[in-house]
Image (cartoon, rainbow, N blue to C red; front, side, top):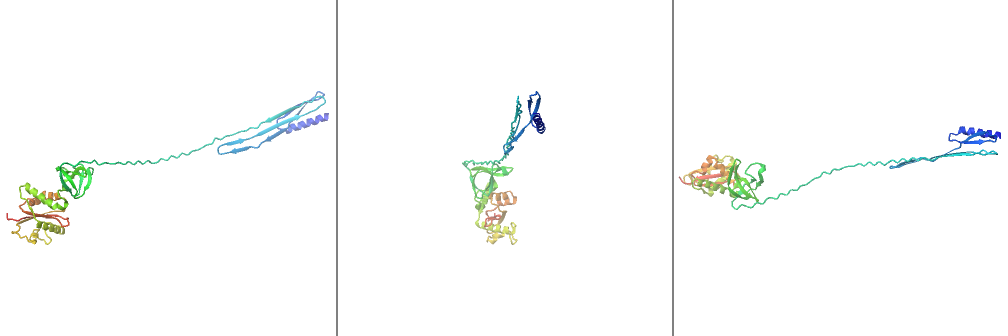
Length: 331
């Protein structure tokens, strides 16, 4: 019996030295009243595999560890058996880490340039034509809102030559010139008087002659007869002036009056005195007339002691205006 007890004690000591786990304690009472303490440690460790699952949205780590220790010592004596069993179970600890998904949203703001198209419709105010007035003709003039110069006053850039319009009232005089108030293209406006003809452009010669006679009558003088042959001579003189660039002198150096003799007019028989006015070409009859009227020498010819006149320009309607004047009587 003593040998068995010693063997058990030795085994208990060896097991105690080798075990690092929790231990169980068993008390054994022998018949002789001795108390012997035997410690037997049995350690069973079971470790479950660790699984790590990672997704983009969630990461879960699970660790399961099960430790079970069970010590059982049984000592049997004829009189009494005391058995103490201690079982320790370590439950697995599960750690779950949930990573909240992080979503990064890139917001791109595109600003569209807003284009606003405004369509403005301008309705021209239609003006009623005047009840009275005189029809006249354009020489290629600008119509303005007021009788002033400047681009801001322009209503119509150019009224084409020979276009008709109605002139209302008399000439208006101001610091900017001489103006007519007119009605054209359903509008009222102002044009410079020097750009206005009483007759169509192709009849400018008639108008100039008409103006000359009006001037003479206003002064109590006789009207001048318009002679067709003199008009032909005037046309030839216009051609000659365009060639030489010199008024009152013919290409051969002779005086302008020699053209009368060339046409068979005999001085002292067919004519006694001759005169000539020259005005650089213009489409405006009034302008040609006004240039002569405001020049002393030319004015004196227009109101001089003459009986007939002829006026023309080159046959193609260009060149200088030439006015030939003659007195067909001695006095």
